[in-house]
Image (cartoon, rainbow, N blue to C red; front, side, top):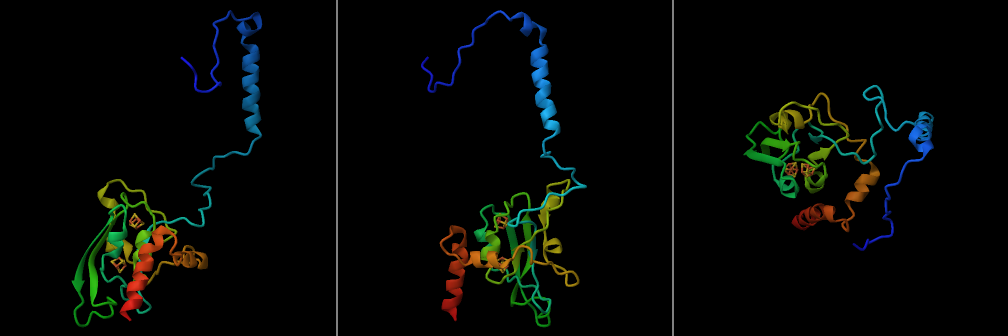
Length: 202
Ligand code: SF4
Ligand code: SF4
């Protein structure tokens, strides 16, 4: 059969020479390769004692933010769920009752909000789609867990606590904020549409 490249080599079954039969030259050249690796920089690290620095664009576990007064920002509009390519987000909405203004910023809020971390691909589309600056991906890692059920994160995990707000400084750098406004990038289109809807409603 005609070979597509000229890289193929015809292997002839020939008798081994006396030197080849000793195997010593082959063992010796193999040992040289092994010794060379002793003095090379090791690509492995001693995890968990040593932790490799994360990339500046790492996207990790989500947070549902509160506003300055401590009220939940999410208004259960569902745009994050619609934007999510992995269909990882589900929620149910409820109407805010009189006296709950300190709990929920808008008249409608997410009674339940869940993200399936096993489905999530950490693309950040939910963050880009959110018109209320409620959901953000952070620099935190998702925990290792034992059952699939545990990976469905509810509000108890996603909403930041008032006492320990989650910092977004590492991820929301000025460059990231600027990048989000570039409409020529397809994944920002949802954000841009939102902005237009918002602007036209004023
Ligand atoms: S990061 Fe992407 S995949 Fe994960 S929940 Fe958000 S939109 Fe869905
Ligand atoms: S897009 Fe924002 S406000 Fe709307 S449901 Fe998602 S997190 Fe809540």
